[in-house]
Length: 216
Length: 216
Image (cartoon, rainbow over all chains, first blue to last red; front, side, top):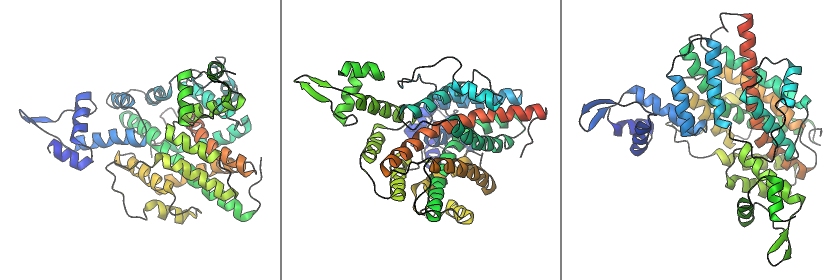
């Protein structure tokens, strides 16, 4: 198909597609004449992937490019592949925390909490600093919570992670695609489910107890 | 304190603070002379809140402004307050889905799935369309999943929502603050927990079964 048809199939403007081609986010079409190239289903799939990562996953173009690099570089060992995939994603949120939150000691309360919990996690994992930062941000605005509540959240996210990990295909190449996309694109699914579940739970509690849910 | 001191206390540049004052994100200080105003702890708190919503919650300035409007307008009934608060947040992500995903019928598969599940949710809730869109985005890039897997995610997010709802204070004014901030700022906590839990779960499964987790 021509570029105009690729644009029709994907709902993405021709100018944007040209930009993706220039930036290497989209592989070139097959040259058919000096001014024309032919695009196929692989181009449709790639454009949908790029749009999903940007619009649903909220990723920057630079992050999309890193993700595409990992997706097109086959890995070897399952665990290494999974961890490399996670690290690709981690860099996205690793802007310096200019939150008024001081960096804290190298081993903060998240490390201690994880030790207590027995989580097998690389102690240098960037998501530890992320959790440290977001947990502190909650404290800073006066909605802080204790380790007990963090534990209850962690119990449920462990359940989510089990669903995630068990759905990873055995083939390493398919696995890396699944992990990256599943991690980025399932986040907004979970966020929407949380909002809807909050409504369901608060309506259910209101109905049972007209005075409202107990404060704690 | 002076503006320069407010800047030191919060780590936010004077120029940015002036911008917040002009845009109404920060309430004016007490005038002490023709060129000088005095700021106090309420200003420090407000600046921290604005920064947390932007940096941790990833909100736009317009969304932060809407959140501050709701926070400073007392509500009446707990349920209405909670739902108004949720609606404020919904508008943030409601950019038109230009994802190549057709809008689908007014009652899509999420409505049917929720009916089956018995969730008490406003059928016009914007997060239903959000879930429809993000679930379809997963299909579009080939990591689609069935209702059974959505149910397992929903079970866990219902658990998260129970923790959320039970921690809401009884006072309506405090409740609205708690719901908005808890919703926006706990999202990244959950996302970080999901990443760490994925690592823990995949390492645990690797150890038990060197061939890797079962593919399904």
